[in-house]
Length: 223
Image (cartoon, rainbow, N blue to C red; front, side, top):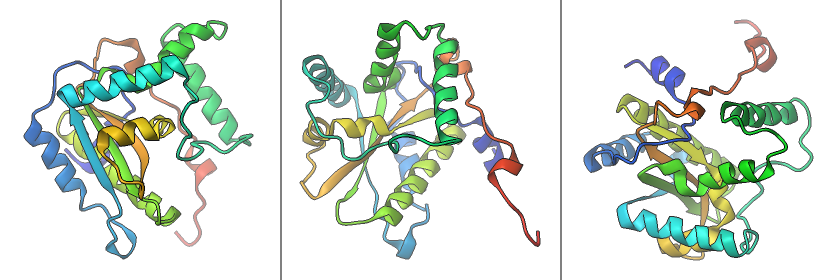
């Protein structure tokens, strides 16, 4: 598979089969992804991979927190800026509308939309969860390094016949996740990621989010 093929095929899968991928395949993906670039070769990332009973226990604990008080924990950071401006606001709005349309959940069905959002914290049924952390003392450049590490994992997963969904939503429950990962206070939760085999029959996996045309995202001079 060429890199361009993996880039085109990669998507945020939101319905997985329960079949776990082979452990050696998962380990190989993470090991190869460590070749991702980082400024000064700091390699600021750390990834915690959970499956089986360890993952079930985390999912159950987060579900209990959500049922009691979904705002009980202080998120690690704001995933989106407040008062999004154009064109960011429209892009986010359209992605949400397209997603719920694929599931035939109308705007007035608030309960249905909330139930779908809560699937984030079941990793959409994926049998493997990856949780990315980094030292609190690093800054935004190192956060971008972790993003490149995550993207490399996602492309290698495609090559291996697997699918993923990056989930910054997990940063809303740093204490619960941190307890399961045995994180020290100096380490912060950046993002989760679902990993597994997509449920090709599920309508949500027919959704491909839109992309702006080239002339709206790039300028070229002397090229």
